[in-house]
Length: 193
Ligand SMILES: [Zn+2]
Image 1 (cartoon, helix red, strand yellow):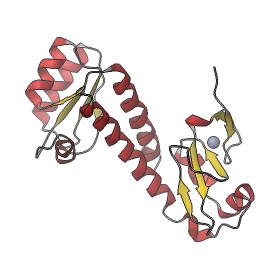
Image 2 (image 1 turned 45 degrees about the horizontal axis):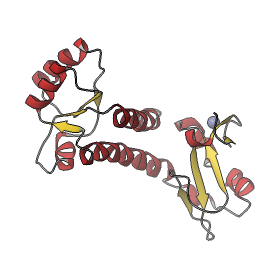
Image 3 (image 1 turned 120 degrees about the vertical axis):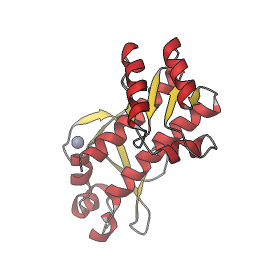
């Protein structure tokens, strides 16, 4: 069943509103990203691509669609802010995995989980050592898993309350799907830069 549809104000195509980014304006004209789509008031939608987001952030266009005056300055830094929010959502999806005890970290542990075939999504830190990356990549390939390169060892470690983690394995399908969805949004936005 398709959910409610909304139109991207940049390219005018219609999509399930859950697939779009929502932007709302406070009474003072400040723009707020509403990724959970829960804030009251009139909002605009754009496709989750850098191109549509950038084109949707035009004061004139927003003034028209939000039916209130939006200053040019209100859109300053809004793209970077959205990318940061998307990155935070990726971290949040890993945190959900940790809370559910379905996220595991540490090189040896992740290696043995990959060997057993328990891993639904594999995350490697961008600053992982070449030898560890090689070892994990080979194990992942054997299970037809594509590793996702995200964050730094320090940032991944912080999630687990330790100093450093180079690899994280998600072993629940639903949580892995959530991670892959959020990571996809973040990557699409970031790589469009
Ligand atoms: Zn669009």
